[in-house]
Amino acid sequence: MLTYIKESIEELRNNVTLPSRAESSNLMVVVAVFSILFALATWGVDTVFSKLIQLYFNKILN
Image (cartoon, rainbow, N blue to C red; front, side, top):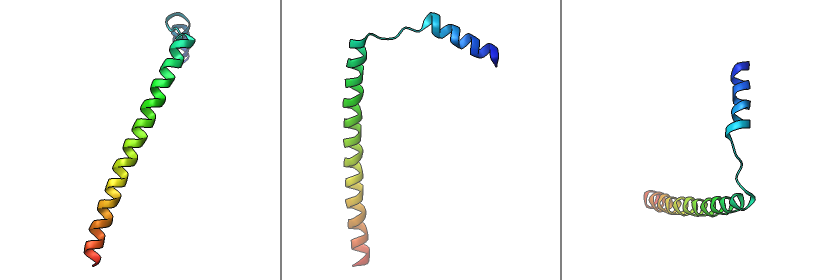
């Protein structure tokens, strides 16, 4: 386990590079836009299914 941790730290120091501030900002905008779009799509599907279920149960109960 200790060897794994040591090798992981070594790899982080030698092989991992952080993106620039500008690239990070661009990626943050992309993630935010896709998150909003996905949330809207989920809301839309939820609304449609909710209406369908209401129609189904209203037909059964009447």
